[in-house]
Length: 295
Image (cartoon, rainbow, N blue to C red; front, side, top):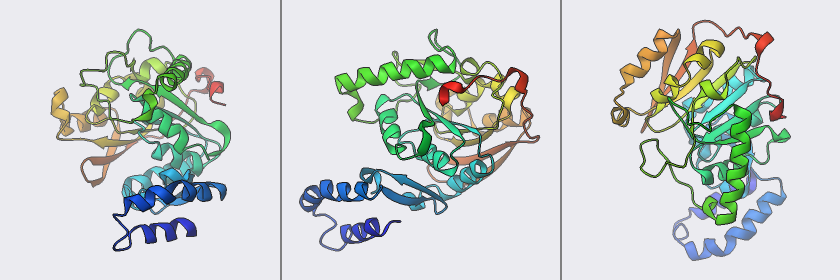
């Protein structure tokens, strides 16, 4: 934690000042400006992964956020430093930032069904080098809508959607958009099989947090998994899985049938699973997907 941020957080939570929102409304803008002038808020996510973020995001308790999951994810990307990271359900973009700051050689594709969350993720990761983050708008599940297309098309469609949302102001408020919601008709439906029809050609890790639709994502990635054998960090939601007719046992069985070993890292409001294939991936570089658009 930077010294300025540490002092600010200490003062913010002093008795008598913690609830003085009128005061913090006055000093918030100049404080953010001061932190950003010095390069942004430098934080150690989960006690292990250093990232730098804009000051407006510095108020979160990132140092203690999902420590076990962050640690496992960070250690993997640090070793596989030229990997492709698929951050499915990226929300504010924390895992994307951890990956981007871990290595200047890897690329991240961040997915979310909420346009405002993608805007926030782009801002959250803005201080990572190299323009290696690409955003994809859509629900990643077991079936793809007609406009899904390959990953390049999904990235371009997302750029257009982001531009349109900024014009209408829809990007200002983030929310969770779940696959069973009643107002998701306009959100593209995506599958990893449709987005990546040929082998990636380098190590891949999937981080997935999509509020109970995790088996749907896996079912739409059957060929992708067979071709690439990605490592996976899954947030599994036992209370929500039955909404889709699924269970933790069904998710575990799907993974086991495809050669995965599951390590239960920890549980909070969800279960965090690290899923590693029993054999290391052996990419077929002769037919690998061209990811030059990520540069």
